[in-house]
Image (cartoon, rainbow, N blue to C red):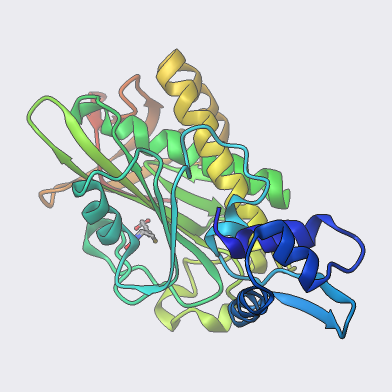
Length: 325
Ligand code: BTN
């Protein structure tokens, strides 16, 4: 814990004013150093009142995804052991892949207020403006086979859906493989990048984008029909920090449950959030083929099972689903 984190912790847990002298004694640093750290915290957006000759009082943390704020009260075992927060990056997935190559711990979280080249699935861009969303990537070393990747998409989807439901009360649904849907509009998505050998996933980076407090006019015109935000759907401001902590908490729970009990219980949970099974759909699969049929099930690999027009069942491991009414 660095000095600024310690100062915030002391001020936060003390209801009375805390003098510079007390802080300097507690932290074993000079009063000038205390004052400099307080100024740094204010620059980060912390509101800390100072009453001359009496001391400091914590008023408010900034509405920013700062590492020490994310950690505050976070109860996770694997996820977020390290958190690296940026104001702006190209893509958090690119940063996380680079860190994983340099030996970052499993569960390391990279988060940014803004991405300049946010990436979506199938080569699309991901709109990631400053201050309104959760744009984050988490590093895993799951040690499973590349064929099990599809399950990871669904595990993350369930965890995110659960977190959003817990925090906002919104009715969240999941569109296979990993779109987070509210009222038929996309409010979030998952992009998995990995490095693998033929038989083992060495490193997996799960990129998560959640549109939290964007208003309709914040979205580019071409997204307004299909995308939405939690704020728009809930019709009120969402606490991004609290939601982010809950997302990390639920990912920790579901990832560890998967490692202990396998995919079967998570598949059941995914089906309870399902928006896909039972629908007549069109799936564009990698390579350009388009498949039409009824989505009938999620199999034990996490693949989507489709009943084609001729009655044959076909499994797809990845693709872009749209509904045909
Ligand atoms: C999708 O197309 O549904 C997936 C969107 C994933 C977006 C997130 S935002 C954080 C991470 N960094 C990226 O560049 N993309 C993912």
